Length: 188
Image (cartoon, rainbow, N blue to C red; front, top):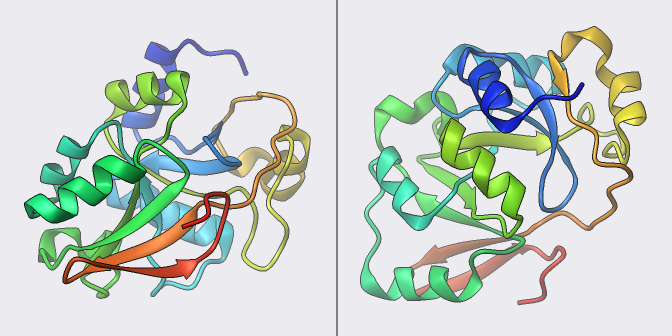
């Protein structure tokens, strides 16, 4: 499907589920602020309901939308690794976001370094993004692969050819220390 960013953003903000090219792989994406869309992604992926999804953002300031306050040292760390293919787990104890943190009281965020994705995020606001595959199967490398997995259950497919990448590196920042939880595309 060919959509300009404005129309794509409008569709996502209306609750539609999209498979979009991210900075790593194709992502099954929806607005981070629409709980019913988030639940649909969990059903589509057959994902463990206790496992939070990664949220992609357009800037560090977006963390404030989730009531996340970061200290100066954490901000410095984020400014060194972002934008890039690093997802960072930060505390998010706010009950309002339980549908996102699934009781874990923390969320993973990534600030991508891909111009067209950042433009989309400025229009949509933060998006959840999970690899475009049912749990335990390989991530879709092409839109054809994604359509085999999800067919008409996904509203929008944005094709950017074959995407191959390791997943994002996943880290947690606690007490000014970095803990690597998953070594991915970026070596830390």
